[in-house]
Amino acid sequence: MSNQKNKPAFADEIGVKATRKIRARKSTQGVWFGLGMMGLIGWSVAVPTLLGAAVGIWLDAHYPGKHGWTLALLVGGLAIGCLNAWHWVAKEDEAMRDEPEDKDE
Image 1 (cartoon, rainbow, N blue to C red):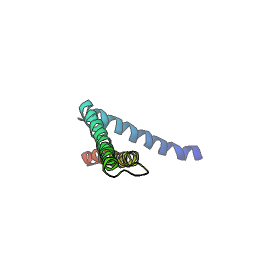
Image 2 (cartoon, one colour; image 1 turned 135 degrees about the vertical axis):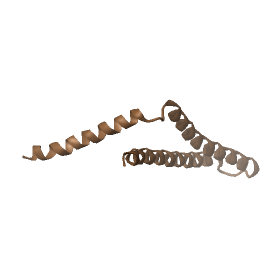
Image 3 (cartoon, one colour; image 1 turned 90 degrees about the vertical axis):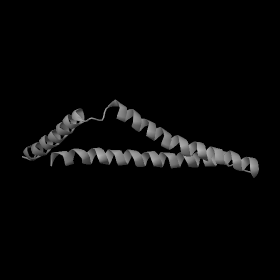
Image 4 (tube, rainbow, N blue to C red; image 1 turned 90 degrees about the horizontal axis):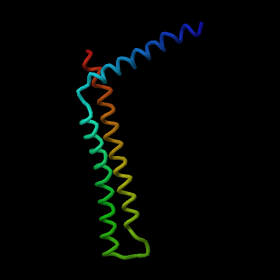
């Protein structure tokens, strides 16, 4: 009897996935959108990383000390860049999941 209860839920899940797949095929966002998003994510990681390294090099040149700043600020910039990329990906994922629901209503 529990097998009968699972079938409607499974069928509904398959229906939702099939509908999502059909909507994805009809989407106008294609290869160029994907490449643009990859570029956006790449720059959102690269810019803070390079800025952190540049500030670290400048600090090491002007304020030499026992420990260097370059590596620490490079890692800090990389962490900020990764958080920034995660933000963009989460935002786009949410937009993609919300958009098909709006078109059906």
